[in-house]
Image (cartoon, rainbow, N blue to C red):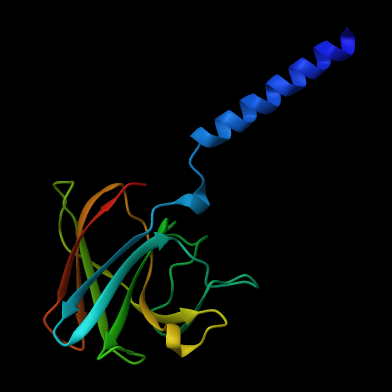
Length: 163
């Protein structure tokens, strides 16, 4: 009888833990945003992803020019990775001059902020995966993002960040 009681409690605890884990959002299941627009002759795909690492043996990104990246354990405490993939005539642009500005549409403090743009590529994938942007801190809400490539007319995006 004692073993049966122990088994019931163990089973109940395991089921409770399994159910609770379904309710708690996981960091690796964070929201991914992807939108494409034109900036003059350039196709720009804006992506907002969970913040990514630039250092250590498991670095996801390799910075190869531009601004220094906002590191995961740095003073900015980034929670997102905002980047622009740029192409012209279907070919990725590996040496574009990209500027990214954003502003919150959810608060009264909606002045344009400039994102320090680093040119980077996916670790182990090389220049074919070149993209531009950085890690940053974004609160949940609505944002407008403006991406300019080589001085072109900007691509404009509206995004909603859930977490």
